[in-house]
Image (cartoon, rainbow, N blue to C red; front, side, top):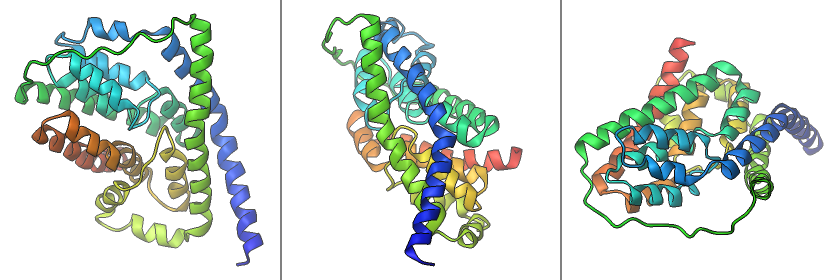
Length: 286
């Protein structure tokens, strides 16, 4: 196959995926900017040491348009303010896989079933693990860490700045994901992907393969879509999305600095096996 034909197919795929995802990305940017500019972190601070605080921080993580690395400073602040590790754990599990950007991009490329399943499964895992951590890992007292107040902007100015930050900052990763997805769809034979998808331990190998891949802010979604187009089951695509977003190497490294070693190991194992279970469960149910 000549280079021009490959390039033409690449452009066709890129346009197809872009038209599929960009309207949803624009809506997600508006929603994310609204949350950043109109919802104050002080609201979270008031509930940080309540019994239900993991629910609050999981919801906060689900609404914050942050990637797996930019969530670390926020998690440090939450952990500093809390008497338990649970709120920070709930935030760290929910933040990289659940956000307005992820919701709308998932909806545009995969439809309602997988989108809702990803959010319900991710949210439940965040809460279950957070409350297990609360039972078995006691946190020693620590001094709270407060961030500076920053500029006193009007809500509208803050909204415009947040919109620009998400649209450009997140958009570049979505664009990269679209380019990778288009290249995957053109260069990888569908017969090879189909054979791999039928391999008995495919979910395990997908998870292992995903760990060294660094994806950010929904970048994994168009890549997973290209895998589905080539022959992956949707649950296998979900395993890739959860693992690549949740247990990338920079996040693992930061987690070992934030938590005691045993808790950090538990966090990584939850992502590893949770990604496999989530994908298998979706394919069984749907």
